[in-house]
Length: 310
Image (tube, rainbow, N blue to C red; front, side, top):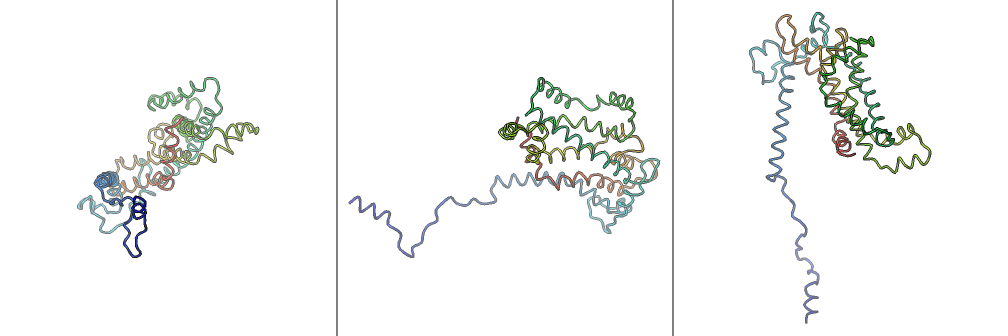
């Protein structure tokens, strides 16, 4: 009797009968938790994008419209004249050449500073993990300790050093300063990232007779694209947006774009032109924004891999 009832319970449903779907019910998209999260994200996004909106719209307005209009309104007749003036003929002190000279000075500072600092930091991080030497931990501790000391403390000694080297007031002085100050945090990132890579690859290469540089260029570098992108974003944004080192070490003929922007905004000649000031501000920030948007997808991945391990 029990066998008959068991067979009846497992017998297939008759043809044509409705079969109830099985499995978990689909969750609704708009849950209270998601609504709260997305509301907070939208609110903070608007908070950070609103100044950019004001700068961009103001740069497209004429001065009469700025004076008598609403700062939050869209331009009635958009014009890029303020952008042209900010780039070519805005006064940055005694000269009226716009931001163009400062842009090229920033390029000359940013490119070598970024390349040199990243390369040195990558070699340091690789050596501290895979080629440990006596006192390596002390060296690393001193290096990291130096990154917590404010830059202003080193200004006067660096001025004396660069003056004795004969490069004070030149682009070379700014490049050296940015390279030195970029190494501590970059070394930490590269050290922790290389520590997360499989050590078996390094050991196998050593068994095969590969040396320091061959392992570094043929094994470590091809596997380190995410952390290189992180270092690139950090250095480009940090060096391009720097004002302090540029105004102290570059000299009046080599001012970077940020110093030229400050001179335009704070110029005492004539009536302040807010549209030109806003256009100059947007132009100055385009390079780091472009770098981040092009390579931003690698940023979080590299930080997660290079900042919490080791």
